[in-house]
Image (cartoon, rainbow, N blue to C red):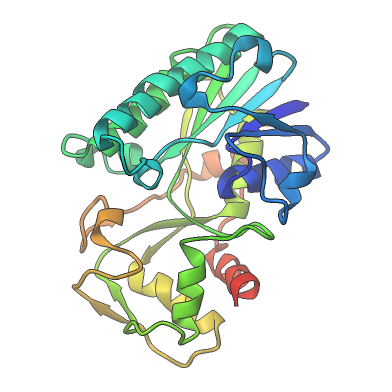
Length: 299
């Protein structure tokens, strides 16, 4: 199939694009800027555009059979000079459905909206969190643009763990430096936990959703439920450090409270339905291998 991956210059979209290309698909990546030349994505065709600005018009999307939208915005993407909530509203409530409407008008047959898990895994968080509200709106708004000839499927993912060759990471490089003894931060994890999933598992889930997903489905995907302390311990183990990470009810410099929407000390668990895992065809128990890959790349 001829596939466009919007957000394909980033980590999750880039990994998915490379995975789909490895399966024999004709993959183009889309983004505001070309792919980092040190990454394998730089070898794929590139379609420049900003979905928030409405750059992906039907005439530019024409000819693609499938589309993967992996460019959703979260707090990390809000410009410093922008109003936080206005930006997320425009990006997720307005621009995401408009993008999928353009896909429908272009004759795209099937599209994946890659979203976040909070509104499905912990609906009680929706009422008091406008970021989660915006992600829910993107999930529902994208699928509302479906038609008899255009399938839209949401794949809602938890905390992601992984790497793409040559691509820097503002999240994982500091983790590796810390676990290797290069940052003066105590070996502790904040209380609470969540579900974690590897880039590889997610790319497989996206492939499965494109090939076998039910139209208008919203799949809650995930792998391992871990405390944050258990998760951080994996980095120290992979780095060869004989250090036991302790649990502490304190804000962590590398995982600040703002990055834990459920609140420190609380959980967001995902227990994927076995039938859905089989349908989408993604691997489980892949967090330790993913952390080992991160250590290998950034260590």
